[in-house]
Length: 464
Image (cartoon, rainbow, N blue to C red; front, side):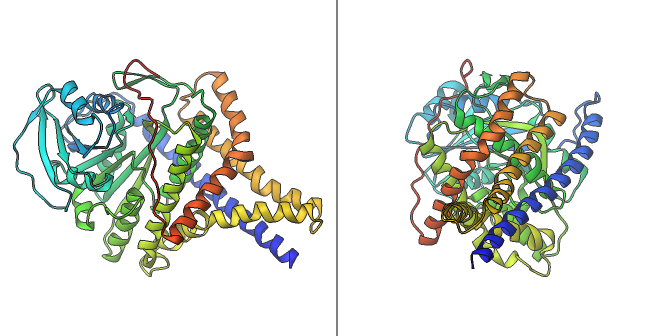
């Protein structure tokens, strides 16, 4: 029995790392193609009227510390035609007052076409300083409800959802819209999200890239590099991407409305929408593409204390489980393709149920070794597969970043990140596994999750 359990856990970790290796190879091949396209796009060219206009939606709830900087960063985007719609979701702090003060808002009567049901809209404002900026003030209904309200008010065929704690690079929309220009069947794209902690931001514009001083934020820098640069990039090459970060994504409005908009009764509304779009389009046998754009386009503030980080990861795990549970018919569907036959089973086995096997593997092997049930050699093999391969893949994410983007230009930055590549896999990763397990247990018990409050430092005035 002991040999069977040991073999099971070893095979599980080998399979997990085998999938990681395959995604890493696909990501490297895809990144090579993207780098070639980037060289072409970097040649001098003029903006034309062929660039589709975009509505940028910024849902905000109690974001008085960051909302002005976020709006400024959006307003200075180098894109020929865009509108900015901020949705104040019944904030209890001074979010609306900050917007009124900073952007000189006045009530603006306009026709509001309700295509998606939302909480009641109290009023619509327009900036006298920036004609392309409007603010919707509405009763609290959650982020998904706010995005639906923004979609109702959007005038353009593409909309981009941006978190209220995000800072966008000036060419963000130009980068994330490229797949729509190449392929008329594109319905959604998502950009890379980076950690803004430690960076210098002035007037909503990122002026200097630096590493956070906080250890937890540094762990998240490494984590985001791995998750975006070979995780999502690998799935994107198969048109099997099931997650686009809610912090920054571009969507074809018509497709989202047809699929029913954002669901208001789920925690992970961003992933749930993407899985539903896959299911919706495949059930109707309509060609489509959902793509990841690796160029760093969005910077967001990461939690710097354990409690906030724990709440975030528990929430993410519950959102993942809700999304998969809502669309389980996609798995092994005759029309499921790569999303239904590969991506969905992977998410179920290695992401949704992964915490059970991963935490169970750590606990069982440690117990078996200390009890003399297995030899040191077997324990060493487990540690190599579970921890050593994790270090290897984290290092590969850092390598892809250095070869392709080289954002962290100082040698000290690379040395620090290399150290955290190692440290992440000998404590931080296991802690995350435990939090994910808590999220899984909460979802099974249908226990109401306490979201907690994200402690913002703000990134809009004079840096950080």
